Image (cartoon, rainbow, N blue to C red; front, side, top):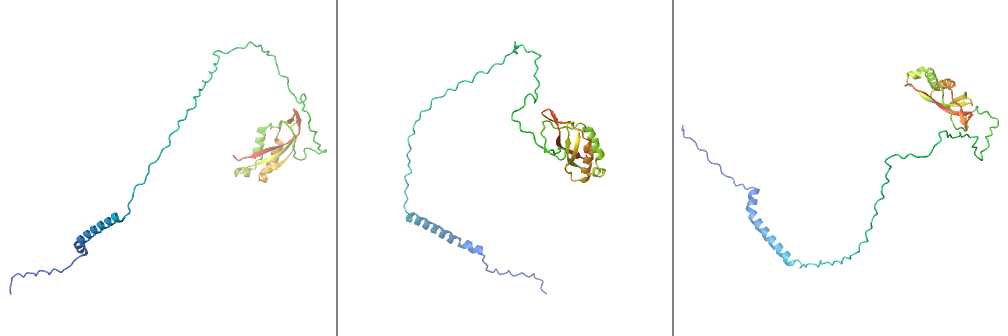
Length: 229
């Protein structure tokens, strides 16, 4: 049996060419062909393109007209500020300390052409709300007593649940400031509050309304507010 080492035969090289190899081989012909075409194209443009000439772009300028400036207006200086006296000036006039102004009344200064008095046809003014002319409106005289009456008459169920409201009341007040009649002008939306307002209304005391310093009976509106706060 032979022990000599065996040598491996070299592999045969297969002929193989890539696209990159073909491109490299054809680069020279493409390059010089392109250069020749560019030269021919530029030469054709230079010879065949029409001749061009520059246009006249000169311009003329009108002469400036010199205008005379208007005469300068001289603004006068502002007037001098009035100097206040350094010391107060005491007048020498004598003023009588007993001078008084006579009281003015409507009876002494009656206007002319007064309209005739309204004819009520014998109707009672206290029956229903209506307008009565007056200069001074009545005002409440017992506010603290009214507040206590509001607290006492406020329905407990509504107060505990935080339900409140305002009842607009009509009051008829006579010449002495006494309440002669009252009614609900606008409901609060809760019948219990309207009824409570009717119980509070007799507690009110008013000053009489005045028309030319004369007490007159009038109808007025007074809001009665029930608040849980």
